[in-house]
Image 1 (cartoon, rainbow, N blue to C red):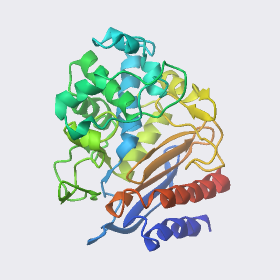
Image 2: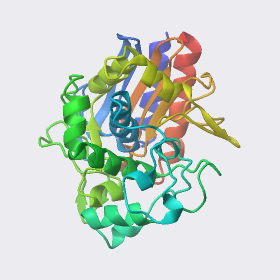
Image 3: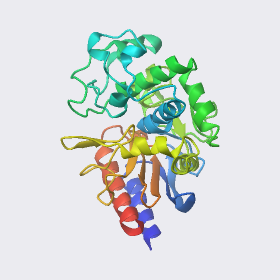
Image 4: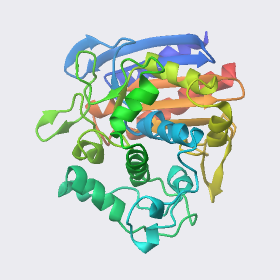
Length: 339
């Protein structure tokens, strides 16, 4: 039975100390085909994981929050994909022509990350990212960058005059009934901890350094969510409950290819050797999170897989290759058997 094999693959990650626990959901459209919980919420906490366990979804925030916010504003006519940074901010000449399209597809030419968090915090850190000169001109290459999505957050705040976390709660999480999804969760009862920073285990604060030192709210990371909420999120996208289907289809059907790299608007596209596995076509979309989280969706069949874990509670570096292997095995099994 396929579900026994799913359990074996995910449980292997606990046995090999890749993560202390995990939650998996396989869905199709609005139907849950299978879901299960594994292990515990932390290395030193024997509380079992549940379907209510809330995980730091790290870079999955780029799609659950930021890409969704941009889609909403595009659908309302408040933003165009070809609006540029020069339309919103006083930026260096080399950045004025960078468009929202470039930011969403990681073709802006911006650096992957910034170490400015070591010296700057809050709005000063954000300003340093907005002011930072790009490495290359737009569309020269696809260079995955957290700075792109921090910049998109700043654009959302500029256009709406609403704090980014409030906008996401009011326009995305609350309307979809994602009651456990938030930045900076007030209750830590169900929150799975991640790594250590400044002498304390992070619980309810982002594992990502930029998101952490921006104050916990960022366009690149910082969202906390549960598998049940993410099921609602994926289903709502496919059935046009968040934005009109024409808008969503633009974001997932548009594919930028430069060399071996491919991107949708905001979303990852399957690439050779990626965690998506080998059974998905280029129309599939998904995203991963550094903490051990992922979503992959096949829009042709409506089939999708959500996996949440907190691998960084064990190690930020040592467990990365193993979680990639587990994801590939899981996705190859599910999409290969049911797709």
